[in-house]
Length: 375
Image: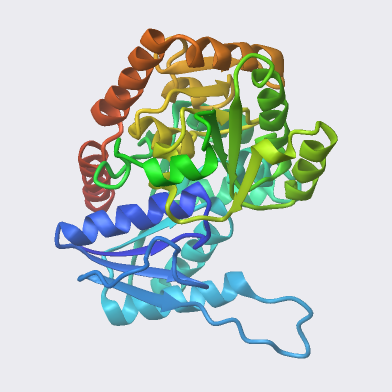
């Protein structure tokens, strides 16, 4: 099978999932063509059967803004025709599904065809899609897709309800590569960040308001009243300066370590004790799954798809949005009870292995591809 994949190439979960999916498909012998404005972050080595096609955005004095959507459509048409693609798989409704739809309509004029599948990851529906001016376009692009998948039951129901869509949406959960994310020693890094045996909390995100990163700093402040602890923050974004200011204001800046964007996430997660995800909105929670695969319990908010991933009082704890007090108590409870902590750590690993292993999820995508192509 020859498959075209379009995704955002940045650190976000959608780009990670799309890239890992392409890598897994290529390993099975399928030919995969990535089409985007930059090479995906996880596509950092040569892989047989993987090809990258860069969307070039020309600048004309007449146009004040770049025409990415149209440039993407043109590149899709070029790759579909010359590489003889069987299927396009786009991640995010806008602009990717819209571009795929336009490419399909152009091909139909020439008596050719291509089918495309859209995978919804969350912010295209829950945030961007709810911008009134975008709603008709998002609804249209979803309804015109030959197949639609969502990364959680929550996201599926949210899409059907918000857009009043009468279309079948297949839920295929995000997955994890257990060859990369697994329990393994990380003693050198651990010794570097917690030289005196402090407990280590970790959070990774794009530091946007929806992630509520300042809550992780407030959690650390409360946890430190009971036990010595450090907080490692991975990522970057608009809220980073606010987080640095808050850490200084609370006089805990020496115990909050800002690592910025990092690729060696597995090593960092293995040096931690707990993973914090106090998000205001989360369609799935891929970074929490990565932590669970490293046998780390997760303390999260009770939003979106997180309750489908984190099992309360089994693989971690779930609290209401903004309930820093309760999240702090949950953290102290786990970090001061070794027997309970070990049970939760094992449960986290077992859940990642038994439900979200790439080997379990990949066949569902292939089966769905064949279903759409045969429809």
